[in-house]
Amino acid sequence: MIKLYGNPYSRANRVRWALEEMNVPYQEELTKLGSEGTGSEQFRAINPNARIPVIDDAGLVLFESVPICLYLAKKYGADTLYVDDVHDEAVLLQWSVWAMTELESHIEVASLHLTWFDESIRDPKIADKEQGEVMRCLNMLEKAIEKTGFLVGNHFTIADLIVSEVLTNVVHAKVDLKPFAKLNNYLVNNLSKPSAKAAFAPDVIEPVLG
Image 1 (cartoon, rainbow, N blue to C red):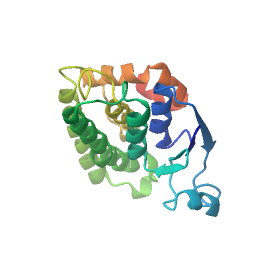
Image 2 (cartoon, rainbow, N blue to C red):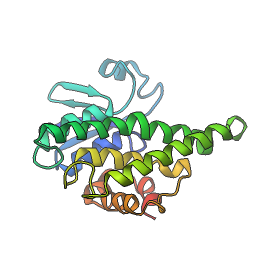
Image 3 (tube, rainbow, N blue to C red):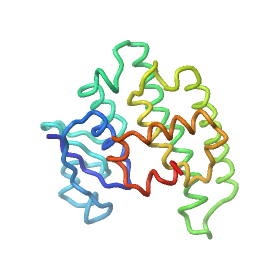
């Protein structure tokens, strides 16, 4: 059985969702941040990078959420979350990586300066700039799903799952998805899946679902 190290308020959510979507049995070891969890010697022996999520699949230990999701989808979801065409695979990888390097990075910085930082160190200029970048990313996604309703081909893949999980955090960047009608429907539909409801803490997805 796969062992997942994570917690309900971390990037382990996307890994947990993938496992639930594919009905892959797993056991989760709740892992705190800091010296009692990710910073402990015991955890560093598992992941020297001292971050979650981590999985152990029959002795294969992987860290970094997107590579974990791609590995799981290719191994356990070849006929569901993955694709069998090399061109489709390239597009799937493109959006999965972009979700981290572009979409999530801008959501995170905007969120820091609008929600998480103490007001004394928030920078409105940085917040405005990053909100603009988030809007640019949302426009890209709105166009990308226009034809089929999905990022790759005509079915829900691991790329859709990763992007949708990242979008659960857009509320903290104070960006309203409702003007993006297709994208908003896409996200609501994806987060309404039974697998998503099993994977997320209610307070993570309820602000998005409304």
